[in-house]
Length: 228
Image (cartoon, rainbow, N blue to C red; front, side, top):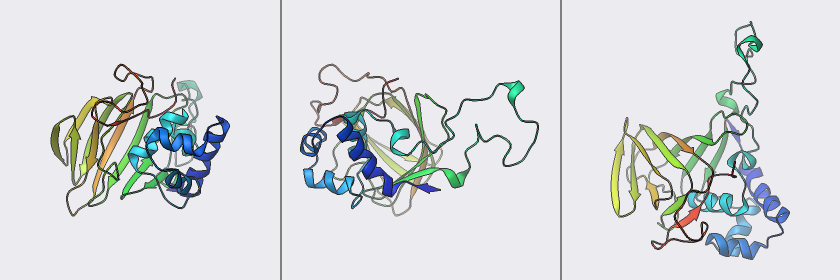
């Protein structure tokens, strides 16, 4: 797998500077301290899931941008263009090997492994791993973002807190909800929880009001990627 630890911070910094935004201004907008954001940009620490989503939304960048677009990213070939040969190197445009999956290890024991995605896709496909005690936010806050979130738990147990409700998912359980609803994930067990996650739809579809500000529950409002 291809780790993007060393590149993530500099890519966030370049995106911020390209938009003429100050470090303090961005930090205030996404709800972290300036020193924390500085440590993220210099690679001294990793953001939590909620902080990364907030930065992605505020800076208007996609996960592909931050992960170097190492996924296949090319157009799918038509049937007449498909190679006749078989084997591991037959279809480099549409196949992404496991060893090439871009990976981000985030604060609090969460890992994202980016799966293959076509250019211009409105889907963020991820393998997510929550280590024991890991959560999508370091401070327990809920988050919300545009799109519809689909999840399928492959192994372990994961707790979803959404609005004022709590659900415990086991292996084989799945979920689907509007991501503008305040939510967070936490692994309250002693075993890792691994799942397949899809966030579909990058256009704004959050509740009325400031799409990037906190809602009345205090959840951070963020976007998974650039508008299509």
